[in-house]
Image 1 (tube, one colour):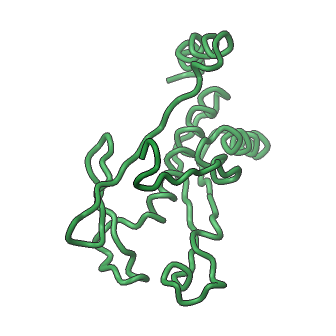
Image 2 (cartoon, rainbow, N blue to C red):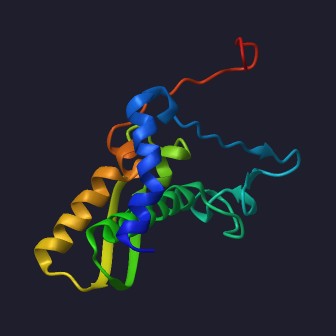
Image 3 (cartoon, rainbow, N blue to C red):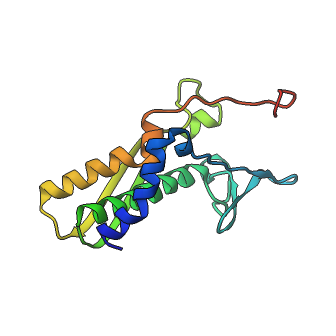
Length: 172
């Protein structure tokens, strides 16, 4: 795909969203089915099912998916797709590239060992490894623009309001 083709695909969408902003509000949804016998759940996706379970640091075997890894996978997927769209729009040819996300979490927090230990990923590094036909300044602009428009990166940087609906709550 080239920049002209991408612009042609996106032009009618951009015009529609300018004229009717509420049409741009795009729902996202995920669910997990709880395993009645094990400490795991099944997460359906467009490509199949993923079984998530305890990380070895909390008593798991390492055979099931880790939700922290799944979060980082969402980061690299979104950043990778966004980078490809931005590089296409900017006319930058990427011969080879990878987006790598790494994070750290403290098992003491989630195991309830230390109430002062944080729960959740506390440090995430996203690294772009690119072999491209652009000078360093243009690559810097590419990455800055990718950061700006990546939905998952921006969600993590500007956390949304989260509401927990409990059994018995209206709509739960």
